[in-house]
Length: 110
Image 1: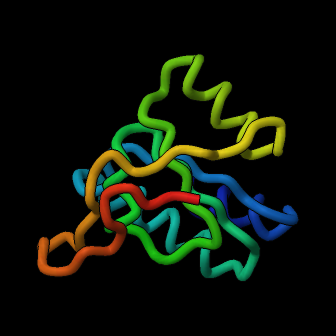
Image 2 (image 1 turned 60 degrees about the horizontal axis):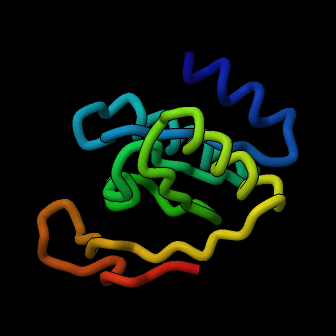
Image 3 (image 1 turned 45 degrees about the horizontal axis):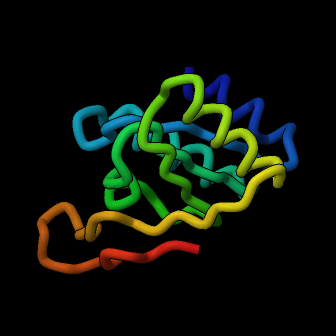
């Protein structure tokens, strides 16, 4: 499946990948790493909590949808296509997986 996603990403101008609780599924991390290695822009969107960003390789953009219900996915699609802004701010602090370093403090966002 990862090879198919990489092939599709190589033929695209940009790729959006959704994640959900990546700390419990290393396959998702491998997928994002493989997509990032294509050299094409990758946007990661967590459809669960925002903590996935701490486990993923850097991507040009990361969005937290806080759910995979239809209303959340529609809002995510609107943000990705520019039909809606992204005024949200993190309601939590995101730390490295070992908890030692703050990656994004409470209130971060753009």
